[in-house]
Length: 328
Image 1 (cartoon, helix red, strand yellow):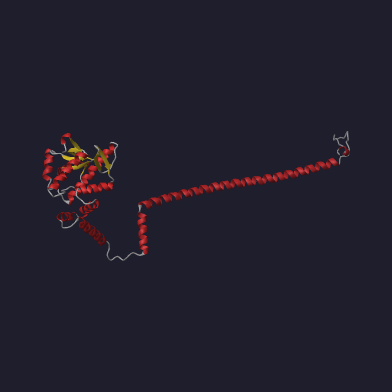
Image 2: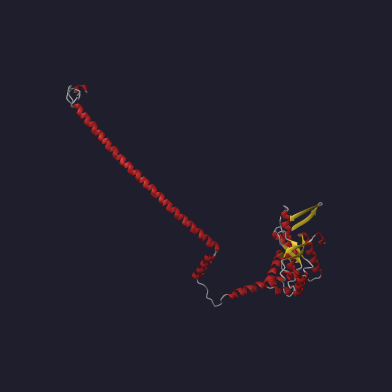
């Protein structure tokens, strides 16, 4: 049994209370209840489960919650249960409905949603303590020791479906689609007038027919060019394509800048090479000129030396001439 005495009443923000698809969605006339809450406050607190993430899943008290919202209350009193306590309360609620034989398809879907919310909260609680996650825990006792197996998500959905009375998770998923798209078919399922599979097929067929009817019936088939043009238009509106297009534009700009930089660097290098070539050519000519001057000077000195016959002393110009035979 769930013990409420272990928990104090807390005031929680209404905005943090999560409400799933309720078993009985019609809350009826809540005007009188809202007026009473406005005059005397909320006497009976609602019951919620701590989702371990700053949010609370509503367990009981939908009419009180809606009435509090109607009078624009920002917070209200609530009995906050742990995931384990909420699971125990939900099991009792389900057992009572099963005994009354009035557990409808909508109620089974609601119960499945609550189980999933509870198991997710339990998983967050385990992970906060350094344990493993997972939607469900398969427990067994062997040799006096408790063993726990953490089921993958696909098996968890199957376990939830069987727990609430569906034959499979696929059947539960189809019932959920019917409840969302064609809720008026749910009473027919409960009365046996149709099956979940039949209601699902009817829902899918009518949705497909409605989608086709929304298209223009007299519109001629699109040509190949029109199909291609429509594809291009859709592509141009795709945010990923626009992002890639912008990135390509940036890369092209960077490539153009790099090309200009390389061009300027190449021109500078060519100018330097040309300058060095001109210097080399100038120096080569200058070396050749100096070699020619040196050869001419040597030839001139040799001719003068061969014409000297003797050494003359006392010359007015003071030049000493060396005889030719002394040079041999």
